[in-house]
Amino acid sequence: MNLENSQLLRFTTAGSVDDGKSTLIGRLLYDSKSIFEDQLDAVEKTSIRKGHAGVDLALFTDGLRDEREQGITIDVAYRYFTTPKRKFIIADTPGHIQYTRNMVTGASTANAAIILIDARNGVIEQTKRHSFIASLLQISHIVVCVNKMDLVEYKEDVFNEIVAEYENISSKMLIKDVHYIPISALDGDNVVNRSKNMDWYAGAPLLHTLETMHISSDINKVDARFPVQTVLRPQREGFIDYRGYAGRVASGIFRPNDEVLVLPSGFASRIKSIDTEDGSLDEAFAPMSVSITLEDDIDVSRGDMIVRAKNRPECSQDIEVMLCWLNDSPAKPRAKYSIMHTSNEQKAIIKEVIYKVDVNTFDRDTADKELNMNDICRAKIRTTKPLMIDSYRDNRITGSIILIDDSTNETVAAGMIITQ
Image (cartoon, rainbow, N blue to C red; front, side):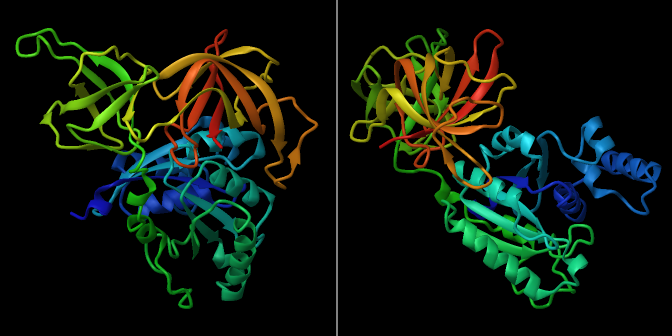
């Protein structure tokens, strides 16, 4: 099997309310035969009870009772499916502006984003907002699905106008790879199968685009980063002197005999072995979970990071981030929060809000410093001890943080680190 095809692809969907996100995912699952019989039976019964002539495809993802009653998506609905060519995880995220935080959550681990545009309405403010968030989260691949083409008589010029309009806004953002597909989620045009109604479209349908999307190059293979999660000391026969450092490779490649540093202490050593439950490896790369042993007996604990001797992250207590506020309660000035960065937990304060971003217009507001739910800002954070950081642009794992309110134990903010 081709390595690219055997990889897991995570993608998120975004669009305005009633653009057909849930229907599109339902169509994708239904036509690719990825729905269990009991799920299909339950949805068929609900569709009949609601008076629909056929199966209401949106019900496959609108899982919450409130969503089914209102006909909208208000939470992140995750779905999993597999085709002969690839495995997928879908995060169906809300369209309402008040659920910006849900889109940030759903998109934070995505390789790709499907942005739906209603062919009748074209690019609207929410399209710009979703695209801005996708750009902010460094999602490498964007698939713009122009939906409801059946309602504009499958006209090519309508599609071309929307493509030109979207290219104009995407040129102002950090969006690298954009695909455009004219679809009708309700009728299945260009979702899994090619549309007979749009012979003028020469591209692939959505599923084929997702199955063949090249994501190997999305992983940072240059900067070797291994955040230590725990120390393994089995103390049993055959492993009496074993001391391994377990965790998940965040980026880069590690091999036995590599010269490495342990941060923040700066102690140098060489990799003795890279071990898994199934035996030792000749190399480890992201996102593999392994145990690394070192030639020297040095002090390493949870929160430390093993890196290449000649390729170090920045160690700093003063960090600039793009911060999305996720909590109902506003940020407290100079309040102390717990900050989670990879496996490292420290205390931190928000020193300064530099500016807030209007996600609809991309304007920066330097006057308003108050952070409320769904606000996105550039801020300065001070931590009690140095963190080993990279720019989020270069490394999504070592470049991201979350803030936790110690009094409620709630995650209040997610941040993308900016380095000079």
